[in-house]
Amino acid sequence: MRLNDKVAIVTGGASGFGAGIVRKFASEGAKVVIADLNITLAENLADELGENVMAVEVDVSDGESVKALVERTVSAFKTIDILVNNAGIGHIPQPLDQLLESDFDRIFNVNAKSVYNTAKHIVPLMKKAGSGAILNVASTGGVSPRPNLTWYNASKGWMITATRGMAVELAPFGIRVNAINPVAGDTPLLKTFMGEDTPEIRAKFLSTIPIGRFSTPEDMGNAACYLCSDEAGMVTGVAMEVDGGRCI
Image (cartoon, rainbow, N blue to C red):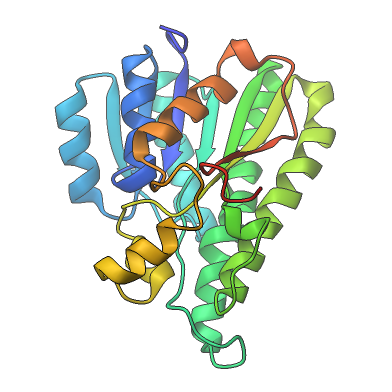
């Protein structure tokens, strides 16, 4: 029960890595808000996990939507101790000069502006409380970029830099800020990263991961739980690679 009675918001928490984090947090005693655009999936997971888990529909790229999320969370659970910025999107691998401007804008609105939106509405509450933990789910792509995913890689590199800047600025207020860098996982985004999901392409991708498998939602949940728990009280500004050695 490492997160006993903590209140956590997990954006993009209805599926994939986010759902793994939600499940782990709930099992460790946290009250969890699943903040997701897919409210049906979010409600199904909340129903499965019980009364301490709540689903809220949110568009993380929209400041007013995030404000409403925060208000609903505080109304239900009184406070916010943990924020996990997990919501993110990618794009089909393609030359950097061929990505549509609308796709570029969507990537940065969801992967980068969302971190600003949640910070704007949640950091003041954490400052007032004198404590808090923020976790940004970045990517190995922000550390070791792959060709034809340049703008996705850049959005995750932005998130890693934001994590470090936030950590330095917010440390005096008792707020820790870290990131995790997963390698691709067998989640809804996998096809986006690989372009096409075939046994041959999977084998080629897996050959670049020394441990020889994709990241799993459970891997992300375990790493997130540690970084957001009091056990990591001296850890801030870290971008932890949970990637089976991909970035070595």
